[in-house]
Length: 310
Image (cartoon, rainbow, N blue to C red; front, side, top):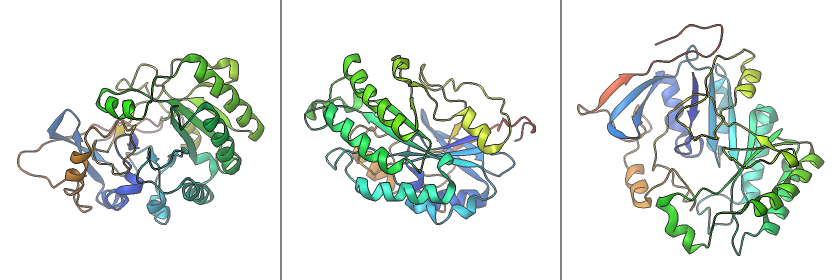
């Protein structure tokens, strides 16, 4: 099984101690997003896990502990965008994160770290010209430290509509998207990087930009050196090309404070949740109790040389 860590929160930045404790114990209890009393017991031993996919904006806390993953295969999705702290409130500076990116790449190899430049939006401060200049600046520094960049455009979730209104962030037109993508395509071709989209329906083939995947079957097969029998993830959006995975994160637990975050529905809830965290607990929030309904997750092996494990 592919383990996603995580679309729902930044585990490498904020909960790496908990994650490594879970590896030692061999499992995690993962809350059902639709029912707070239901949990899946997800096995995390090397015989079950085909590959970890880490999602992070600041994986620095994990870098010195990567030797604890020697028995596993993995790669990182590293989101690095040029917004200031009015947008990404509690992140290190762009310059600091570029250095972290390079350090991680030196440790694991550029083929195992995917740069995410997303989400892209425009307003009075962050114009088309801003993105063109920022993308060139960052690409020129990351060109020797990654092989691929994934981009996506801002999604207008209902729970953050008021924030978008306050920052004058509106849906982008196809013309605006193509204007940005034309320049991005020229930049990556200069630096020999692949550029792909994430869950976007717009056709950008004229700029040599194809639809990509974040839980990427081809990349995982390359990393694990074994074919996968994997289906498209039916739990994701229609335009998402990711293969099936199990996410071990919990919504409303990320304290980065990025205004566009789909995984944070209520800032006050985030801080209440963080107070419940214990790095020694099998749950990301709180401890197991008698009201929990815990079900052992069926771990379907995706490597072609394995059987289904429980």
